[in-house]
Amino acid sequence: MGLDRLKFLYREVILENANNPKNYGVLINHSHQTTVYNPNCGDKLNLFLNLDKDNHISKIKFNGEGCTISKASASLMTQTVKGKSKDEAIEIAKIFSQMAIKQPLSRKQLEKLGDSQIMTNVMQFPARIKCATLAWWALERILLGEDGEKETDRRYC
Image 1 (cartoon, rainbow, N blue to C red):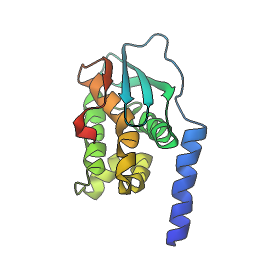
Image 2 (tube, rainbow, N blue to C red):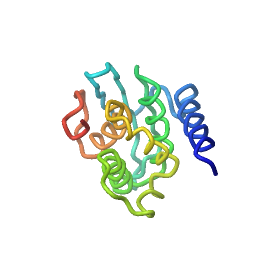
Image 3 (cartoon, rainbow, N blue to C red):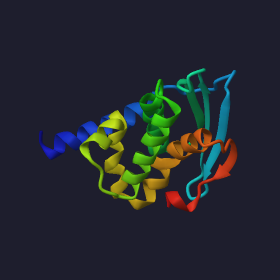
Image 4 (cartoon, one colour):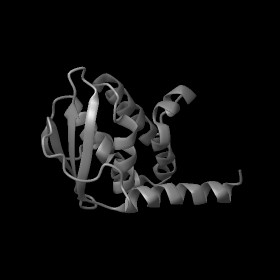
C-alpha cells in the first residue's frame, strides 16, 4: 500500500471517529466518572464507565469539548477497552502512553491497541500528543481509583 493511501486512510479513520464518535454521550447510571482538562488547548473530556461484577468494562461513554484528535482518540479508546477487564484496560492505556512518548513497542503490544494504533501518526506532532492522550489518561485515572476533575499532568506532555 502506498504512503499516500495510508495517509488517506489515517485521515479517514480520524475524521470518522471525530465526526461520528462511538460511545459518545452520558452514561446516567455510571459506577465511575472523571473529568480531565488540557489547559494548552482547552480540551475537556468527561469519561463515564461501569465495571461489572467481574471487573470488566461493561459500559463506557465520553463527552466534552475538544479538537478532532481528542474526540477521535476518545472514540477509539472506548471501542478498544469496552469488554476488557480492568487490568487489561490499564495495560492497554499504559501501552498507549508508551507509544505517545515514542518508546519502542512490540508487535504484540501494538495489536492490543487495536484500531487505536492509528494514533501513532499523531505522535509525530508534539503539540497534539496531549490531545491524543487525554481520554487514555482519563481511563487510567478511573481504573486506578482517581475519579474526579483534574488537569493533565506532566506525564502527558
